[in-house]
Image 1 (cartoon, rainbow, N blue to C red):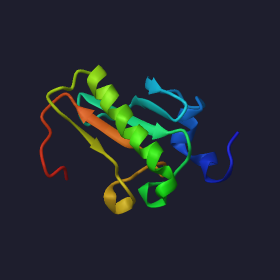
Image 2: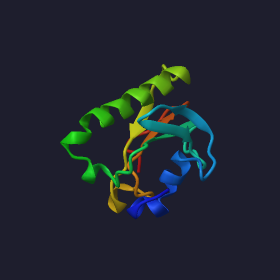
Image 3: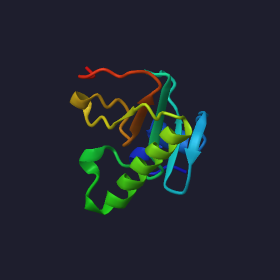
Image 4: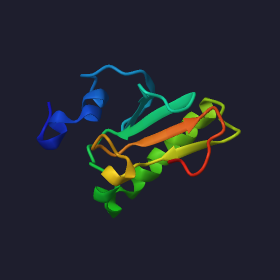
Length: 118
């Protein structure tokens, strides 16, 4: 079932269905689901099915996957009618606010978002 670090990874368990979630989108490369602690009316997490700890570990060979994740975020934003705007965030490492060691995108929208974020 799990190998190496993915054995204890929260998002790997969500992707494979061991932990339940509210699916928003899925395909062969990624899985998107509603955040349990939303920071905006729309807060979707988009995770690759492949376990990658963070952007620090995403080398050039992951370029197509990273592009796909951004495309999926835009598709979900269109489906959620976020035409007035939205934010896509990738937190990397503890100082960047990453709390789960599995690369993921946050799609936030549904209200005006301020800058700087925090």
